[in-house]
Length: 77
Length: 326
Image (cartoon, rainbow over all chains, first blue to last red; front, side):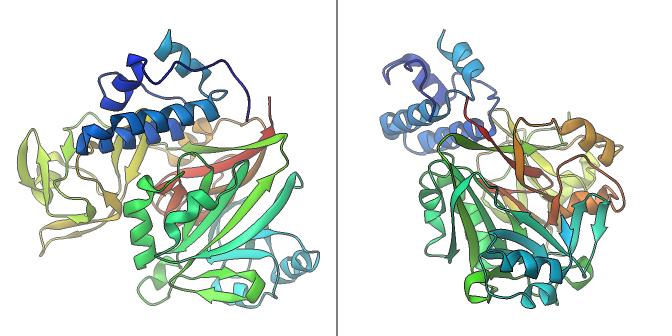
């Protein structure tokens, strides 16, 4: 795993926006788009799972941040 | 590469770890060894699109692998595929078409634990299109020369720590400019759809929109375009059957028509940094794109009854490349 800059904490509002779909973003890495889309479906079924879904998204971004640098810059700056 | 049975036997004898695609009779003729395989007679080879019942498509595990483990999956264990896939490496999964396992994977894989965190690629084994309904798609596990028709087989490849695998999806289809369509139920067939908030019979939608049934429905998953291909129109039953499930709550559009498949692939396939260790494409692209004898670029492999890139895809090229970590 490639170490990179620290990601924003789970409390950053962009995480909620990404999961709930209020922030629309086209990811450059296929798995990122597929994961976020499925997390959004899970959130629509049960909004109470939001903290768990944010944790999953953040863990994915942490692992693959070297492949989605452009996306991270756009989402969190 | 395409190879003769004797050439594949020689590779197996050299203790190579292999992923094989070919006619059932050829795969049955192979000895025990560290290989997995699935039935299909269609390939994109160095000679272009090829139909062959006399050769096997061979992919070797790269030298930068530090281990390769074969595992067999059934309906109860397939949910572990992402968990079992190595943290640093990739998995090639082959499932037999038209089985309960194929169906379960298609419906449930987006929710499997770790599924998008690992590199899980693969394909759906099939048969010659002339034999659909008669021939049984099968997968093979080389260590016991097992020939399986209700189970799947995977090769989990762990790479040396300084290397990483990446999965790429090449989808030459885009959403067309037609109406957005949803489906009230998840499944491999649909009689009803929802267009503009109103329910409608799916064949009525096809009729009034003039949709070409050789083209898939395309969804947009946060930038990743995924297809659902149409298997058949059931006129008497007033429904469409699909090669992959449509999902309730997902918005689709009919694909924009493509005038020249081969050229579109050539322009769509961007050379990846690193070494391609796996690729497959869809037999519907082979068929509708009239790819026999035509080249679609450097990505070679079987033309299959479905592609796996974390989940089941249709009419898509999937590839895995390995490169040194930056």
